[in-house]
Length: 239
Image (cartoon, rainbow, N blue to C red; front, side, top):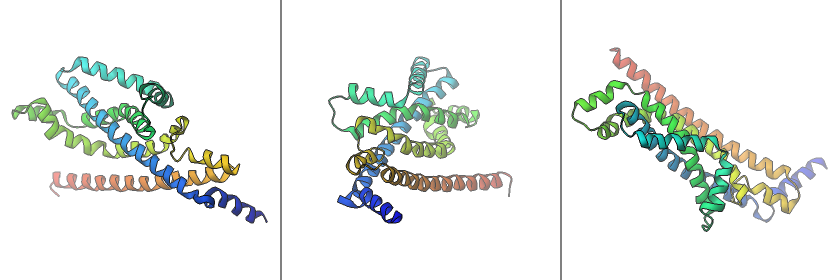
């Protein structure tokens, strides 16, 4: 009788009226938001990190670098849920595409953190690389594009991928403004079944499955880079 009751509750939460489709739709929206946010955040972060790096190395772009510092301070110093509400209810109040608003919000938020990740990646490149590029007649931006950025991207790719994993989980708050992501679905189903347990468990398992798959991919990337470093070290040592 006990197991029959559990099965009935699970069936109501997942199978009846095709509710499993709601979970898949919510999961799809979650991944879309996280992916677009990652692209936006990476673009903003890498650009701003370049500005700060160039300013540090050459003394140029001081004013723009100060603006970047203000952006990073504000974004990192305020809750992302408030940023979401400001963009959803004020900045983009007339726009009906909640998924894109959520993606833009998390992209702007992620950009501040990616900027610090990318800055660390740039600074991990030997200082002589910039000087070598300039000595060959390249401009600062040409040196950044051809020499510094390829090395920096390689150094910060694993933490950038980890940022994507973090975004997948953090986007659950978009339900606060009615966006139909995976975090919103349990509440909708509970309103029809009057049972929170199984809708929440199902959503949690889906989040866990996605994060485990992404974490596995991250480990593969890190392992690949680790092997590359060992090979490079062996060549450098004449092995």
